[in-house]
Length: 432
DNA sequence: TCATATT
Image 1: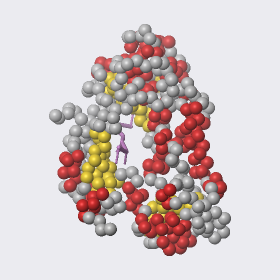
Image 2: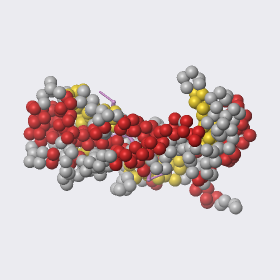
Image 3: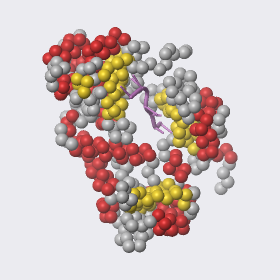
Image 4: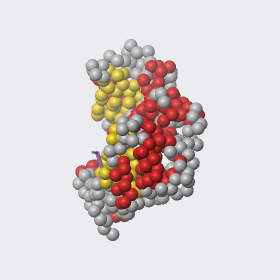
């Protein structure tokens, strides 16, 4: 089966995918291709677009024919060039999972705690050249009973995987080794987030669970996803070792319960969804006024909060009043929260010391009294989904932003005093 | 502590 040269492009074995951030949304794939080709061989550029609007999301993939070419592109461009219209330099790196794939990296589990690198190496070297091997260890150098291992080629790694996984018991061990492809960084993060989430929802008073977490969760991912992947299906053959030993693995315990938890969260709190907490559509910023149906003048509402609950009073009450204002019906006008809509200059606020439990929605609720809120964004840790306690609020007029500053800056919300100021402006004025 | 985005 000779492979024609024309098919090299689709040779996923050798080619390398790079992720590129800080790409101005107006740039075309052809323009980007031309630019990257100045530095390296590039087969293809794919702009990453919003699924719904098809608008650029400000980043793209670049496919290079080899790792060498990919590295050339990274070295020449990463943090080195700022495209016209971008506020910071290009971010060029291997796309998620590329490194793991290219390194033919395996995870080895169920190692006896007392085996050494040398013993593992002796076993695995039968299947190929080991480029890297590392047993995971805890604080006192105690083995965690697993290791990462890199082979020179995919074929070698696959041979080892198929020969050893579930079949080979190390001396003195009653259970066979587990060998699987190492998780990607993304998978690790997904697991972290799930774990953090499950802990959060096990906590008492979980009625006030972050709404933002629901939307952020990779729930669609859950059913197939299985902790350490010990039950990995199909690709490498069915599991041929007994399941029971896995129950001793920390990862195992997090696996099934977590999945159930996802269902439980939806199941046991049927009132959650109607209150728009669970999986809201991307448009709820403009929808919270109705909490006080007759209220038209924003200041009246703000004044109400401030005067009935002076700053010296209980902070919790303030927060509660604001949050609960949204748990009602929604009304028409919708601007997306997610899609970083910026207002005109002077109408965008940077907010710090946002209460931990606030998501985009709560932030919008707290700030919509002062004008039409175009968008809000609370930043969350990518891995854990935990709020970083800062974010943005955009209005459509600078006057609204000013009144928000005067009313909300220093306002005690949750435990701390909000810091409300104009957002820094990177791009002074846009060129056409 | 200032919009970082993985089809």
